[in-house]
Image (cartoon, rainbow, N blue to C red; front, side):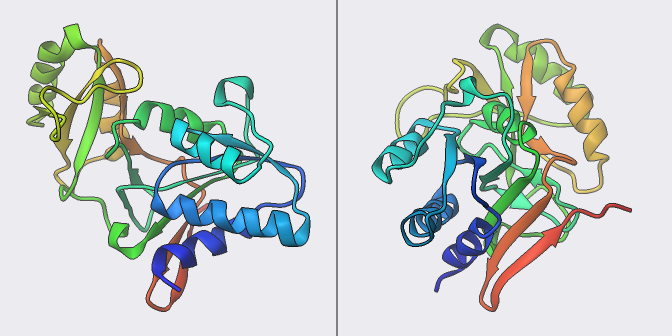
Length: 228
C-alpha cells in the first residue's frame, strides 16, 4: 500500500452513516473517495458528498454518490482535503492549484476538517520552501504588491507555465506568491494580508484543520489539534 493510499483509507474511516461529507481535490483525496466507494458498496455506508471542485464532482457522479454543490449547503459534518505543507501544529499551506479562497471557505464550513497527505508534505514547522498564494483582484495587484513589500515579503505574479499569461483563479482573479521566513507569527501575517484592499484570501490555514492523516513508510501518522 502506498503512502497516499494509507492516508486516504485511514481518513475515510471517520465517515459514518448520514454524514454530509466535503471532498476536496487531489491525488490523496482520491484515495478517500475510493475507500468511501468501497464502504458504500460493501458496508452500505450512506452519506451526502459535497465536492469542492468540478473534477471532484465528476468523481462523485462516476462513483454514484449522492451529492450536493457547495453553494447548496451551509455546513459540512466532515471535510477532507490535501495540502502543499502541514506542520506539527496543524498549520497548513494550500493553494498550489490557486483555489485557496474556495478551499478555505470549504474548510471553515466543516465541523471537522481533515488534511490527508503523504509525508512529502509534512514538516515540523512551516518555512519558506513553497510558495504561499495571495489571491488579488487584477486592478489591485500593484498596490497589494507594494503593501506586501512593506510587510517584508517580496512577491511575484504567478505565471500559467504551460500557456502564455498569468494563472487566473476560478473567481477570475490573479495570484501573487510570497515565501514565508520561517519565524513569523502566522496568524498576524494572515490577518495583515487579508485586510489589504483587493486581497480575497491567503493560502495559510491557521487553526482550521482538526487533524491530519499523513501517509508514511510505516503506515498512517495522525496529527491531532493541541487543545491546550
